[in-house]
Each structure stands twice: as C-alpha cells, then as structure tokens.
Image (cartoon, rainbow, N blue to C red; front, side):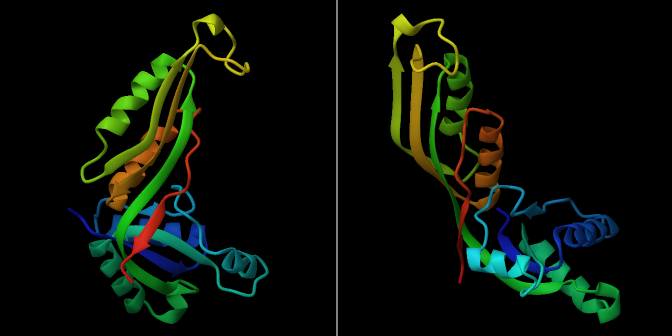
Length: 193
C-alpha cells in the first residue's frame, strides 16, 4: 500500500499545477496528485486564508502526493536555481496517518439508494465505513409526490464515518459525490506529526 503525504508548496494553484505536471510528464510518472482545495479536503485555518488574501502571507497550495513523488518534488525544487523556480518551494511536508470522511445525508428514491448502498458496503481497500444511522422509511400515501415536496414515499437516512488510507477515502468521496443529492463534509486528515 502506498503511503501519502500532504505537502504545502509555495506558489499559486496554477503555478504548482504547471510545475507538477511538468515534473510528472518529464519523469514519465503516473499522475497521482490531489489538490486539497479541489478534492474536498479540509482547508487550512481561516487566519491563514485571510492573511493570504490580504497579501500578508505567501501564496500556498496544499497537495496530497505519494512519499515517492514528494521526495522527487523536493529534489527537483532543490536542483533548480532560485531564479528558475521563482516563488515555488516546499513550505511544509508531513505524512498522513489516516483520512476520515463524516457522512450525513438523505436519499429520497429507492433506485439511488440501491446504487449508493454498495459503495458503503464495499468501500475501497483499507477503508472502513461505520454507520451510526442507517434507516429507511416508507410512506406509501406520498407516492408520486415531487422530489422537493414536504413528504416523500421513501427516505433513506445515513450518518457515519469512513476511515482509512487517504487515497481510498478520497476515492469513496468522489464516488459518493456523483450523486447530486449527497452533500458531504470535507475529508479530515490525521497527520503523522
């Protein structure tokens, strides 16, 4: 199983994406980069975001990469002369012990529920899903009512947490997001430090 790290790179999202794309393509590596602000990972503190917007703190981009790619990123940046890398640099780097995803949603049609159930019952390798709430209700008298009506003929309520390796939790989150009625919390990372 691949180990992952969260790296905080100095540089804007577009600069960081261009650098990483060039590095990965130039070394013929597989693209295994997750930009935290795009894949639903908790954002950094409000204080940091405000200081960054006011221009009082560096432009920072958080990415999740494998240990192997993290080492290659650091070595590639170290090998570049300062004028060639511009603002790019490694601001912070930490291993990820575990990722978790809190879930709390309702589904109002049986077909969608039948598609989502297997995703929770058979999550990606290493991911465990613990449901504290898994309830179905049927109200036959409401059959035929529109999707945004106050009463539905079927309701599936789910509350729980998925935990495990970051790649698996991110994959599960991406699969669940394919269903527009599911609103998910951001992924929480437990770091090694």
